[in-house]
Image 1 (cartoon, rainbow, N blue to C red):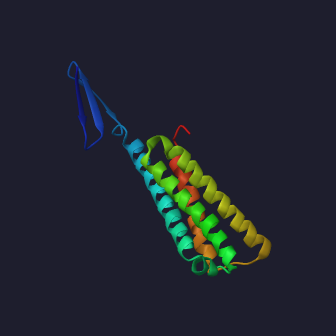
Image 2: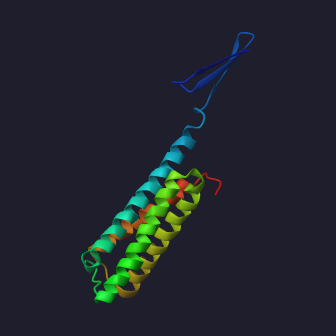
Image 3: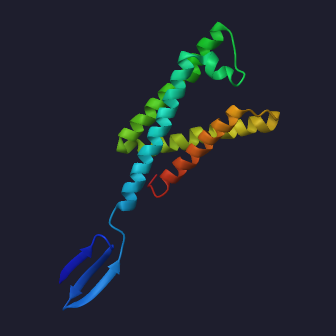
Length: 160
């Protein structure tokens, strides 16, 4: 019995007594490799985004949050820096660690889906309750809904 497989065509043939028996198949593991890379990309981009936003809030909360009407006292700015900025920095670092450690990828993706989904749902609720809508909300919702959906897609087919 001789085995032959054409890499280009994806056709594998097994011959018995000079009678070909060919099957069409996908190269082994290509979908798994693609999904694992996609998971790393989702975690890395989400992590970098949270890190960047966290750094911006720590550096200049008035400039970042003033665009949506958030202002405050000196003590309030300290709170914004620490809670919003610090939380974003920690979350960004966690997601980058999840991208780097294979065993952490699925918990990291669950975090991306649940955190962004929760923020997006609360934002939509707030918009619905108040009728207030700004240009900032468009970008925020694209981020939140986009990363929620990307994380859900990345979780598909996993044993999570």
